[in-house]
Image 1 (cartoon, helix red, strand yellow):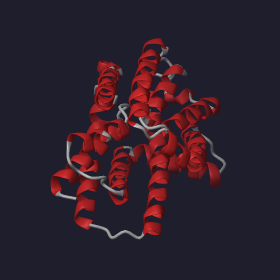
Image 2 (cartoon, helix red, strand yellow):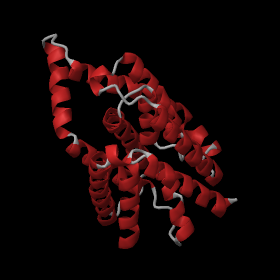
Image 3 (cartoon, rainbow, N blue to C red):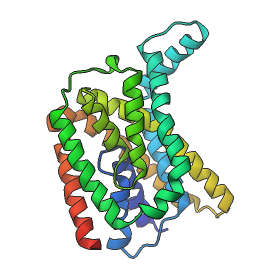
Length: 265
């Protein structure tokens, strides 16, 4: 993998991992617009490592507080909103973890086509728009409960279909449950940490089984660019969230879906 390929891969993965615009829908354009071959499993791992580091660093204070509260709930029996938030994130991760393990090969075989990605990109753009318009956007994160975590967790299962977007579907579910935008996005980002960790761990396992040699220079470039671009995406997404809402990302998804239909029909 050359330098330009590594930078573009890291940039696209980092920017699209946390924005509700679907990384798979964007990455499918790379071989169409260039002569590059498939970037390979090891670079998927590098991109996920960078994205994971970015979200952990950005939410380090939240994570420190949540883990401390969870520790107190275990050792001292002192329960709080933050300790419950730890369990809600864990519970919401279970459905997609099970579905990903059981259905990964089936989805890769039946839903990996370009037209499926184009269709899901458009359909879930419309759903996100509807949720942002119709959602009451009143509930803060302090009001999240077990029922909400279960619903958002099962909604996230749809993200195993390419083109849906993990962040997009969890934000959509949060908005439909009446949470304000900030809460829907924050819980979505917190939920991404165990999901990326699980997906990355599985990819590492696959890599070890395949035993492919590592080009460490391109690995580090992809990870670094992915991490930096993911951090910027998170920062500016949160900064302009209330002002811009979800409409810019809905429009982007609609245009991207139509471009994919044009290219692959």
